[in-house]
Image 1 (tube, rainbow, N blue to C red):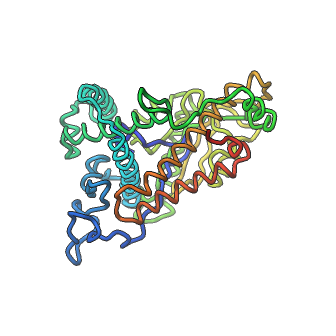
Image 2: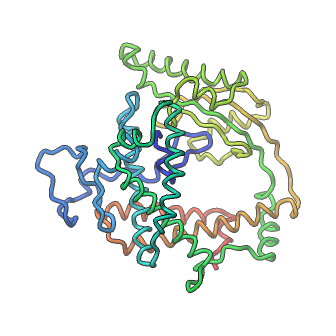
Length: 392
């Protein structure tokens, strides 16, 4: 995703192609006549025109143009379906953030201008640094012009994020005059009880650090004379050569920079961020079978079919063996698991409550987000460890 510095909520899997938070809305689910201040689009108009409305979030009309300004125009070699997924992803994130900002303002929060200016300066510096990997001479002003985004809009989006962050902080930590709404800290007795009931869950699992390079055969169709099999082989050759450079000792980031790879077409596990077997989901079974073979060594490579018709080349960067942990060794992980699970449970439950009362249209968008939150909460109750960690 070319706008990772602008989208603070976006995240990539350690070794998989990014997945969307929610599926796309069904065609025709949104009705413009239901949204205050937004007229019905003329008959026969294209729903993908820049000024087509997508949602009304707590009084703010969100159009396609607004999302394009945030994530940028479609890259020349980016498949249309991939770009539409990025736009959809941003709509969902913007809706969630808008709803939580609405709730934060009802709560009485408003960011100080001096704090917003400080955050804007830091984000502008980070955005320019990322953009200069592709355009060494670009300035922040030029970057905004390229997006068609004003400085005021950029500041407004960051101010909204700051309000939301402060809101969550107060709910968890409290502030003079407002008590905390949840206690995420683990008690000594529950730490011991959780460890004794699930010792294996806190052992060190075998892990790997992996670099991944993605390529879609569609990108190579034209150069292959519209012959799909030839395009597949071209894509395979591309990712194979990239993986080979890393296997030979070059850092993934250096390979990506030298080859001019876009963010989203490659990834690498950060230092000490270990991928464990089974954590990638059922779609990663083939990768698990290869990556966690006892014979696997640093520098091994493999090209496998990836999501959405892509070919993915994997490179093993590091291997970590499994290890049984004593209670003392496992305690930091036990405490972290309790804090993390409580925090996520609380955030999802609270977001569900806020979404139910927030003025958002179309209603289908609210229901899609709420369904996803309910699904994630259900996963806690299905996990043998997390289901024992309740809010208090």
